[in-house]
Amino acid sequence: MAKLVFGMNQSLDGYVDHVMFGVSPALFRHFVREAQQQAGSVYGRRMYEVMRYWDDDHPDWGADEQAYAAAWRAQPRWVVSRSLASVGPNATLVREDLEDTLRKLKAEQEGEIEVAGPELAHSLTQLGLIDEYRIYLHPVVLGRGKPYFAGPRPPLRFVAADRMDENVVRLVYVPA
Image (cartoon, rainbow, N blue to C red; front, side):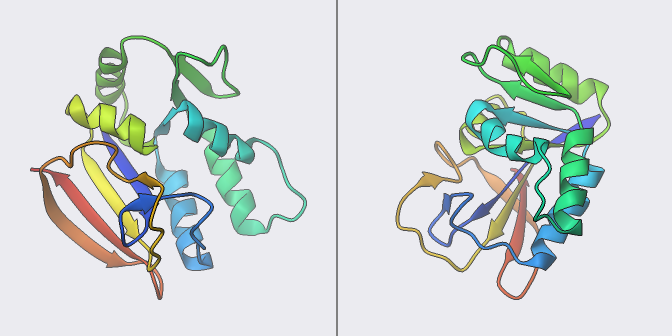
């Protein structure tokens, strides 16, 4: 049975923003290893459009970026959207029956499936489908933006903390 994991970079004041955080080489290598081990990813439309960056090779990429792109391209993706007409390679569009689709996905897959995007994670939290929350806490105060938790915070139980680099701590929680 697969485990749905919602993990994102977060500011000290609780916001996520993919362009506001500097990711160190050590933290990026951690994300490469995670992508290589994941059974797949579930995206909302906006996060999927951001991640499509990895579909195309870029001449300025180093070995880590190439490794991440290869891992991302290889894994299956499920894209939750009512507005997209189609999705790219190795992706499946999920338009209806989100709960049934993801319950079936969890039952049929093995390993970790990444959940990307706070709004999608909120919907899946309400359905009781998120198995683990990973907050990559950065020493940045944004003062505004999209919160990590898009709705009321679910009751959580702390299970681990890991120092990822000189500035970032990963906090791991499960539903209480």
